[in-house]
Length: 102
Image 1 (cartoon, rainbow, N blue to C red):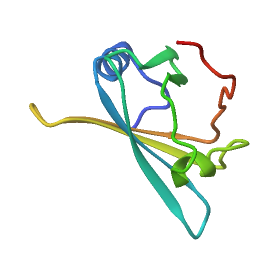
Image 2 (cartoon, one colour; image 1 turned 135 degrees about the horizontal axis):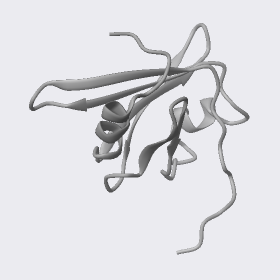
Image 3 (tube, rainbow, N blue to C red; image 1 turned 60 degrees about the horizontal axis):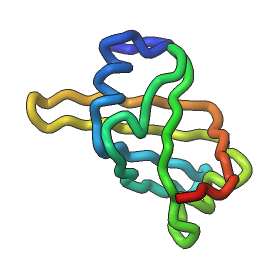
Image 4 (cartoon, one colour; image 1 turned 45 degrees about the vertical axis):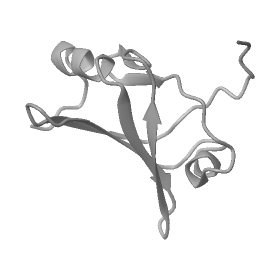
């Protein structure tokens, strides 16, 4: 099923996951990283916006690919049992580069 926005069911599924896979890159290279957090670290703030709160390692090529906003971003969210998944495509990514305090 293809949808232009996340409905409540998919938003709840996204927020319940401890890991997501994100991809970004250029026409010739794609970089993928697994991002981990407590459930809720990735969540829908609206039917068309997803916020991910994760620290990216500066030496990870995915981190470099998303500096300044990537042209295209993809997200894959999997739950092996009961074989549930969602794929989210985006036209842009905004990064908060402000340092966090512990």
